[in-house]
Image 1 (cartoon, helix red, strand yellow):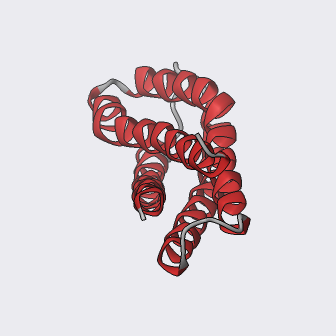
Image 2 (image 1 turned 135 degrees about the vertical axis):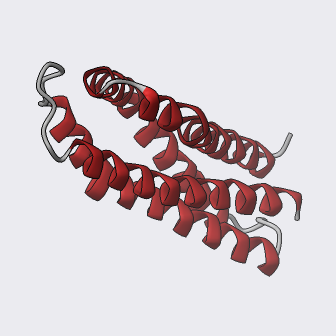
Amino acid sequence: MEPTALLHFGNVMLAGIAAGGQVLVLAAIVPTRALLPAGDAVLLHREMSRRIDRFMPATVGLAALTGVLLLLAANQGGPGSSSLLVVGIVANLCVAGLSIFALMPINRRVAGWSTDRVPVEFNATFGRWGRLHAARTISSVVALAAYLLAALA
């Protein structure tokens, strides 16, 4: 198997893991969290974030990096594929930007909350987090689709 094919494989795998994780959180965790009592919702969010924040940034970052490497590769597959890779890279950068500058700061704030006395801004904070996460999920799925189409081009 040629190196570019292996790079495409790794790129799509990484983007797939990232997008799958984002979709799972959006489709299952966010609605479940909304059904829980406030203290339990804080605990779920805190523990989920602590675990996910360990691997998701690396997965998204490596997907973007492999996208850049594919874009730079001489035998990468033509202009149609290059445009798709650029879309994937930009979408991954959106995921990273939303995560680093919006969602992770919220996660750190929630991590400091007591599960016994949840702050008044609980609903507003989780509502904002959910909307930002939905945007991140869309970006992650766009990246996966673009990388997959680039691999098939």
